[in-house]
Image (cartoon, rainbow, N blue to C red; front, side):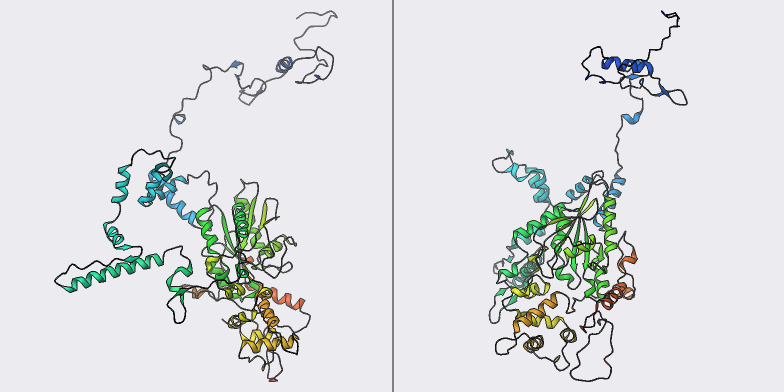
Length: 601
């Protein structure tokens, strides 16, 4: 110690001054003599203390620097790797038995639509692909070993043929298949010429054998997967008096709506941008509005996308029909029953909870997109408006209202994508099928009267009579022309001279058929013996992550009944969802026919 000029004791502590104590502070002042960054860091080191834990080890402070350990500099001698064998061994090793178990379990989980594989990038999916490649046919394995562009063409790099692979591909073929292939070229059998054998039975047996092989080849090629329905000879129709196979051709461009390249481009954009795909299906015609081509595309080319069936318009079919279709569709994909309505929706909570569950499963993504696909006039835009509880997408009771795809925000991380309706031509629909599905607008038909007989075949007579308030005498029509004349006369649609307008009456019937005023549905497949016991069970198909109460279809009728009691203004318009009323003993001829409540199976 010492004494200063004023007689005070000197200490090692630095005097507190007004100089800069932070790096870069005071640099903007014009005066000189400021501290540099090195000086500030050095003074900060002097004034700071090391941070120690309970054991006294330095765990923080300025002494804990990247290039120093305590008060010593870290060099090649002081900084060494811990002597642990785990640093030098294989880090990700799997046993062959564990690998086989992994392949089997992952194959089952990937094929199960109700299971979701999380963090696919972390899972070694290449091990599954390698096993599938080993089981590939020899021709495919040959292309994998040596691609076509590397063997032929201007960019070929092959100098000589690899005979070992070629011989391997040839020897793997069954000799029986070689003989069958040589005898059946182009699907037609080549009759082996007889060499004048002593026994004619040998020649007949050879001829029978060749015919059998030809028949088997024909059956194999005619029933192979991927062939269009009208390409099968069993579905080809024959004109009267001619042996010519033909199929129905769409004569007018009106029946090609929903099949243009622009519409298909909109569809593929929605599929590519979507993480979850909602396939909306009309409950009245499930086989006709289900697009299996999109299902195959997602299964083969985009297995990471989730496909969910939305069975819309369940209020237009009986409960037992909706339940049975729910059980049938739930075998392939998660299925949710839905009724699109702004005030009395059904299935909205179940669908929103399912989308929230998908959002939690994909927490690694900033947001997920949900594409809404389906045939025209199945209610895609109505489903979106019901989910967001406001009119965001343009809706109309006619097909083709949505022209382009559009994004709608459902939640902060979940967005919906509305898509125009797409008609798959591979379904082999006739003109009548296109009209009854709602793909074509009835007002644009050249002759709508031609499609009325198909409507009368699908709708019961009492339902038509109840919709148009026909008396018992008027309800006994014999031809569709009489029915159209009666409806046109009662509606006041007359031509010059008082003749009934059949065209306007036919358009009215087709519009009522498409919009649900004339009740109809396609019957679901028959139940098997093991499912007969659950036919009367009120429970429906269960979807993982969705509460069962939200899928109780027995509540649909009650909600619709309450809605009709509230909205019905006493006009007497009959509906298939009204309560069953008794006709009584009144047999007056002019009394309108009243619809029954629940439709008979």
